Length: 339
Image (cartoon, rainbow, N blue to C red; front, side, top):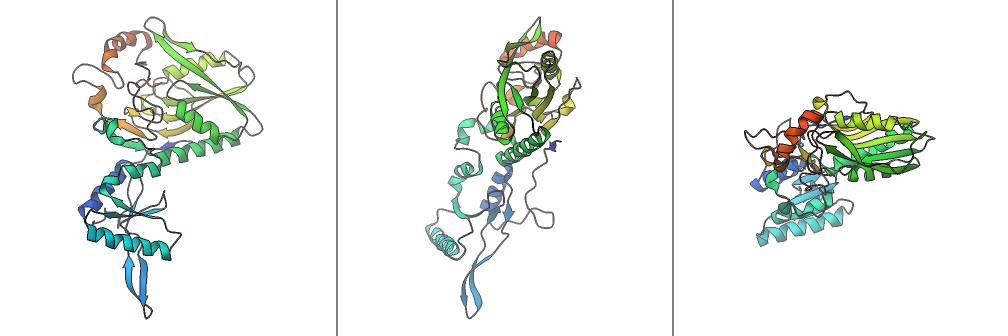
């Protein structure tokens, strides 16, 4: 069971992008699209005042965000307009107390992200020029992790589990997945390293004896399958009762070695991704969403860098290819190959 990453499509009228009444609305829609926040444009009108049974005043908020159950009305710094909109918002809240609505200034666009699971991170400090696009929003990730947790809990009904995570990109996914699983479980970690002559090796081994136990290997991303194959062969030698793999992300088109991945969060294209534990030179791990890194960040024109090779590791990586094929371990991350 897996989920494909789909191109985010905002709500539209007749399959077309709506015609916005003001350029600020188009700008806000583009902002929401970038962060993969679902929206609807002016979907509902609220009557505010009546006279002789006839509506004499009504209010149509600019946007509705269904995942947050929130209406958004945009405003400017023009005081007369702000005062009028504040009055309408107050009246709406009086008449419809169950309706959530916020009056939003342009300067507050990024601040509102904290409401939507993007955390309190100041986006401008994270080099937005290095980010191509948001691939998976916090809401999409958490929804899928919950689904995986339910499926795993059903499949292991009546049994206990040992979750094995591969450091360190797995940190956030493993923590969220463990909370979503309703079976008794223990958690342990592996950390890998590589030697230019001997290839991939274990730097930090498991503390637990997994003989006779049901083991679920939890990966952040599976790429060529070479590293995952090494881990599976190593763990099978320890005679667990069962051994399965759960991966948050799968770059299936990059597979060189067939590996059994029973649970897959998302199948993604062959792009360099960061966030939710995945890093580039130790940056971006704490992003609560997953985004695509711009190619020029990690690839220099004509210098032969492959996806995921930090520049200072390019020479080492070139030598490593002769030892571990195309499975490159660079810096602290494993992108291309990310496993």
